[in-house]
Length: 453
Image 1: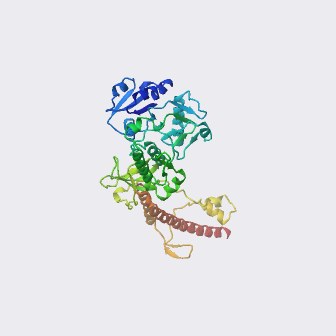
Image 2 (image 1 turned 30 degrees about the vertical axis):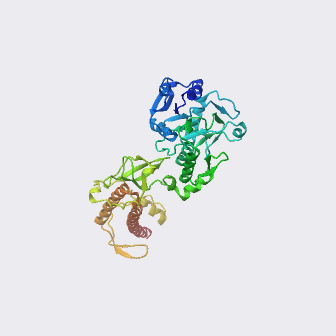
Image 3 (image 1 turned 120 degrees about the horizontal axis):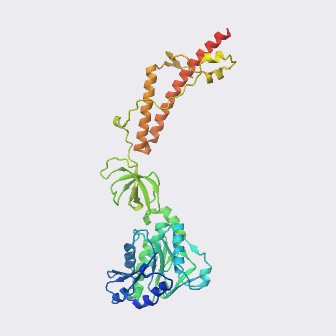
């Protein structure tokens, strides 16, 4: 685990409070990262603390959190703390004894609920805290003093001072949930001297940013003025599901499903086209069907693409295989077994059998010569197929099977044409079976009549 602390012009506060808290809980200094502005007058003192010091350009609070996001690797689990936290307390208002254990528990909960961001209760009030479930995942405010999060490069903050609200809202929209530990709360002083107020936060700048967030997430927030003159946001979780149904694109959440044809509009595979084969939280797996030049290809291994890089398009037209695409087969496979036994065998065994039983057991004993005329079940006559016709049909069936395999590889949308071809094959088989069966039944009847006579 890594612990990140942004600080500006509060070296003494950091040393006495947050850093002291971490050292009491046996956090190694090599796992502590201090993000310090290059114009801080105490930068040398920060460097003397023995922690990792990352020097950034002069920036406000939201930019500082972006610097932390950009510094660590995608998917890293970090704990981000303000520089003025005295203590972390439980629902009984007792100081916790093992901060590492609490951090591990929050990591497990983030993994369990498949989300990237978590926090704590805002005020260490035993009455309010104990009345809540320990963990919740709906949209609730969490004080930015302690943040448990996985690094997500796709989340960059725009607000300079209302970063706690923006961080909550963007992670909630991204994952559909956030994890709040209602039985933990930091002991800290809100709006303390220095900090954001020292970096330019005023009632007017705060009001401007809260209104901007309300405009960005109108279905999830409501802006209002407190009695002390400060402007604040109220979060509205109950409208989120409906807002997603009505306007998914408003929050840049792609509504895609497996088998959608898509165009890639960003990343390494920009301008390629493909078909979605698997869905993840933020990424999907896409099998490429056209390269950047628009040339058809068959990508057997799907690539990982961000949902935000995809644009759902109409499926490409079906590309029928050419003669060059077909594979020559020298010998037939899966030849059908004979369906009759010989009449001679039945006669020799001297069995008393019915017509139905004989038909089921008969097998050809002599080379079969097809009749010159076929009569189907509707008493309609048609020229009987020759041996050459039957062989040609068999080759046609093999060719049709090869065409089906090629068509499936080119485009799944060809299913309707494939079904038509299969129907044709089945009809041909039925016609052959009917003609063969009728001829043998007639021959069998003649033989039986001879036997009876």
